[in-house]
Structures are given as C-alpha cells and as structure tokens.
Length: 90
Image (cartoon, rainbow, N blue to C red; front, side, top):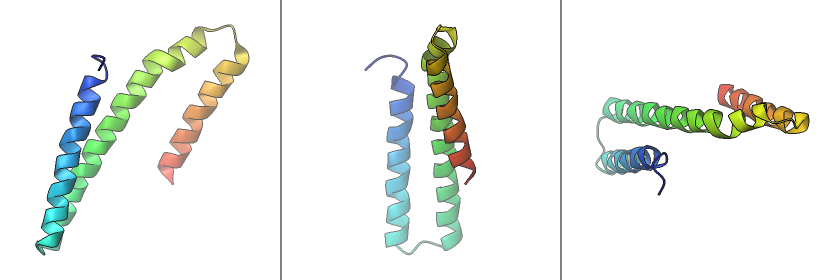
C-alpha cells in the first residue's frame, strides 16, 4: 500500500469497527439516541475520509489535468468535481 493511501485505509477500518458497534447496539436494543449519536460520529468520520480522498484527487488527478494542454481533459475533470459536489447536496 502506498503511503498516501495508508491513512485513508486506516480510517476506513476504524469506521468499519464503529459500524459493527452500531449494529451491536441495534441488536441489543440500545437507547435510540445513543444509536443516533454513534451514527452521527460515523457520518463525520466518513466525511473526513471524503475530504482526504478529495485532497488526494485535487493534488493528483486534478493538478495533472489543469497543467495539461488538453482542454477536453481539464473540462472532464472539472465536470466530475461539479457532479460529485451536486450529488453531495442532494
């Protein structure tokens, strides 16, 4: 695994453990507010991973495309980002 992937994968594994914990809470009929609080924590952790992946993408693929002489590739990459941001708001 490359060094830049390692923190992302580590964070995802931590989130996986939290999701299993939430599943256990549901199975054990934990207090709904406690479950909701844990789900909120999982969502925040997922958002952080999303920011990490976006940062990696911006510093890699997007930077390469912007520096490229290929206008179609620049527009494609910008279009992808716009699409992801629009989907995020839904």
